[in-house]
Length: 176
Image (cartoon, rainbow, N blue to C red; front, top):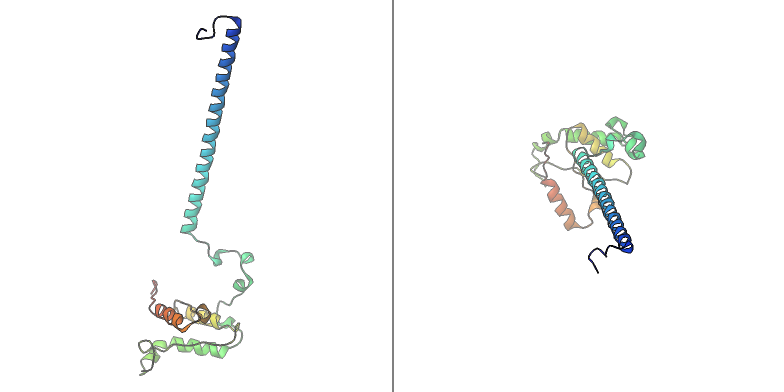
């Protein structure tokens, strides 16, 4: 048989059919390549958007105070922001405030007991929900102290509590 199938009518039809199939296959390949390129572009755009969004969130993390009041928890929305807003135990809160306000002065009065470099600590105890943490946070905020909170419920053994307290006592604030 000749290379092109010969010169007859049937050979010409076969040659035309083969060329049409080749053109169709070429068109399909080009279309598939274009679709693949388009999908790749969309993926790249999505990756770029995700990258940009992650940069925005890294630079400006969302804070509770940035949320509108309608999205905040009720306990956060209506939490006291000043010592005057605390209901109950006002005398104890005032005692805590006075004690912390004069904390440095009290250390120089000759205290030689078990304290931290001559400074005494305070232990606040009471039933749950009476405002111990709120009072401590508001008093410290009012006097310009940074807060490092450790609860007894965080650790349940003496060894773990001692380890946590040691790390807590050795902490210093970046702010000062």
